[in-house]
Image (cartoon, rainbow, N blue to C red; front, side):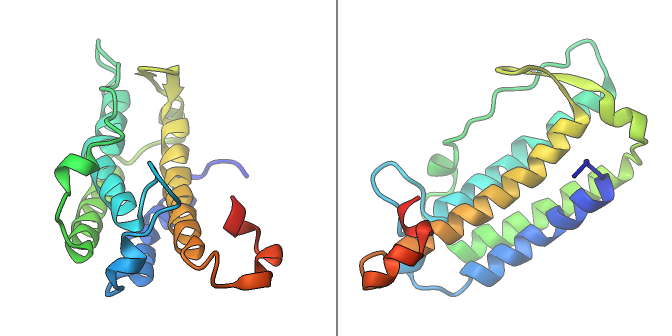
Length: 174
């Protein structure tokens, strides 16, 4: 599948509602469960998505589109949610994520990007030169990866409870 901005935005628009449907109102046992030591719970994952929404995607888009002298991205803090959102309820995180995502999609739409602009580049601290197209495709894949992660973490809370059916559910051992 080739990247299409309209199709990408269609997925990005749905992520907040998808996560709200999956997580809002659930007891802490679902929201705080993990896959083991040093893994993330659904609560932490939503905090991570919110942090990225505030500090990563649109600021990097703007750096690329501006094509200024310095096109180097600020390194992303993949652990910031542990400091920034400690004690926040899932409802707060979901509300904030939905609000910031809507604002970011409005900002993205206001750029009225032409197809040629998707080939403009910025400088990733680890990967070097990356295109706007790659950045936007990664934003979508990042969302989908974390939705899958939330599902996987939640499924594993019943790893032992499912008994012999575990043989038919590979998600339990991933």
